[in-house]
Image 1 (cartoon, rainbow, N blue to C red):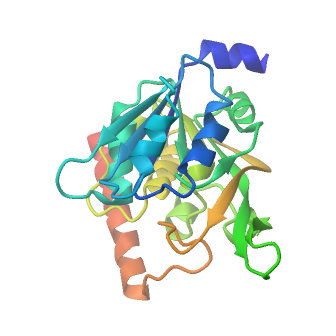
Image 2: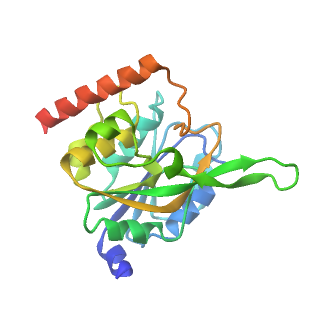
Length: 249
């Protein structure tokens, strides 16, 4: 049944990249292994200066489509927006450039999306261990322990439970979510809020991704560097965007 779903639904994986050469090949291989030939991986690159683009092209997979930035960098949020706007699939997965998808991720998400517009799942946190013997990334806990999900637009406005690399959704969500509002604090929270307000959300408590934690992460899971005034401004901006979006849509 799951193979039937994969063959009948068009899938887009949307990824924003910037200087991700260290992990991009491992991530893309873990994604492509789960996708039917009719799928696409839409990569919006924000002006990488390392080997990211060369490594992507070296895979030689026709399912990969790269959108390059010309001129000023957009940053992770509005760079990803370009990938979302260009995606053609009926089902859209979000992906970071440095994680690893577990083999059952696509099938489990597609099954959940039969009854919901957006699905969110847990992840293993991969942390760097340097003990002088076996240096490398190892599993150290689960995302749900530090960023638990709970339903509700108010709850997720106050305390965000959404993490982009753990999300997939049906295309109709983009009708509400795009274009992104100005000064958006994080794209995953905005997409989650639009799903909470206008659609339905399913949560899978099992980890389906290995979520790599390192100094270059765009999202800080356990402790945000933002001060209290910045956090208040973000929430006020989000509230304004939700109200404006409700009127416009």
